[in-house]
Image (cartoon, rainbow, N blue to C red; front, top):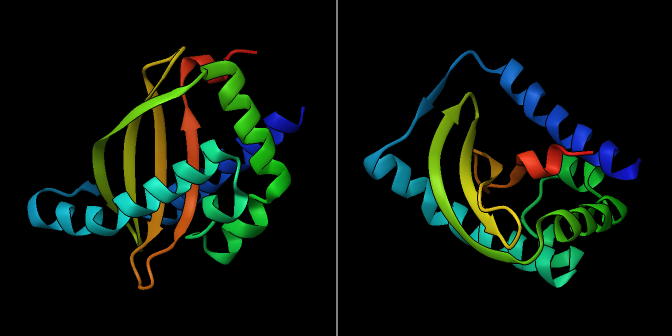
Length: 145
């Protein structure tokens, strides 16, 4: 039941962000590279913390709302769900970099032992310091009950 709560919360953050913006556009070339220059190290830190079980590392780049919404208990639930349903993490690749209102969204494809098509959306503030203001994971395996 707790796992459902954090999944709904993370999805809710994404819905709110989508509703607050009028359009989303894909970034390419130099604009995409500029976002990835800071997004990629943030994604590495987040995933390293997640898979090491270290909340402090995981939440290093969170904004205040993310810290409140994704506390250590939710982190533990997330980690447990990913390990149980997806197995060991294997790799990631960038699928898209989007601009939506005052946010950038980096969409990753993650590969795990049991599911090689997991989507991770990392929402970052455009304003400096760039911080993580949204995060969610999705795959058919995660949606199974």
